[in-house]
Image 1 (cartoon, rainbow, N blue to C red):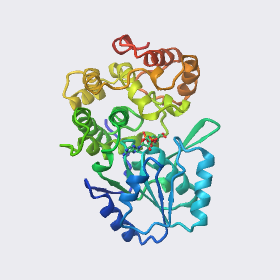
Image 2: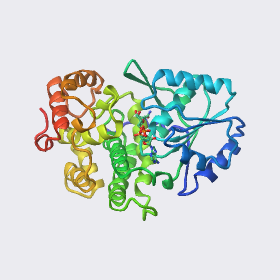
Image 3: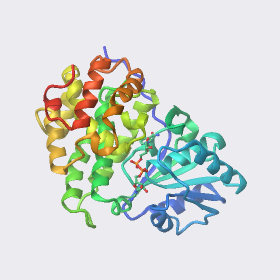
Length: 357
Ligand code: NAD
């Protein structure tokens, strides 16, 4: 008998290609905010300047770093307090959104998120902060952005390899959402749509990264992906594709690389989820669909190319193992996890066809 509890978090989502500045101005006015802090890294500053052209900005803040180091979080919180900020606007990838969340967590300030990658953090109430090289995450409704403004045009400056890695990271959230704890038919329907949109849209970017893009397929996938990620992470489930989180490696590339190994490992033990994934790819088999997409995208293949050292694999496995939810479709042992990471480290094709036992 099917039973589930599905909680939808309250958030306004505005979507419009080329409309970010207009949508942001109307949201700031709707919220009645007067002291706005705009967060954007130095690489995102140009986009942020354009997006915020129609609002009064009390402060532009660019001291953003991957995985939100605690010192940077505290410095940004102090700045927000000293400036009497009443609204945070983050324009950028998951790292920038993460800093806004770290401020909101202690100040309760509302966030408007304007994402420029496919990370999905904007749709979650999950925060992450790094201290002494280890990232902690938690759930707090105060960090959920009140509004998300999606604008496909803002992704046009992403280099193709980053679009591919970021898009596959979003895909990993969708795949994972098919079997994560508390997976339910509502999330699964959204996850399937996320897979379908990313599968259709990412090759368009790979083939022709120059604007204008014929479809905004990948970006259409983002709200769904974010919501899956939300449900997945809300349950504090750290799952198989998360070595980057523990070892501070490139997040999107790490997830993009590990995903096919995790899918090959879990799929035989989750036939209904695997069938849904395959259907979303339009293939008979889930791994076949994913591998065809990776082939078309020339996707990242081996963790050794993305910062993982062979000498650290055992440590990575030891950190990840206790965080894997008991509900993972296939029981995971230290041995099987280490073997999976070794396959992903090497980019082994064999590991895709006969996954770790
Ligand atoms: P990122 O934010 O670090 O961005 C990667 C790089 O791309 C940065 O140099 C950034 O400046 C640049 N960039 C961003 N947008 C650009 C654009 N449009 N054009 C050109 N360059 C651009 O990486 P990410 O993959 O977006 O986010 C990863 C982080 O997000 C990780 O820390 C991860 O843990 C976190 N995350 C959190 C959640 C959550 O729910 N809390 C969910 C997903 C990801």
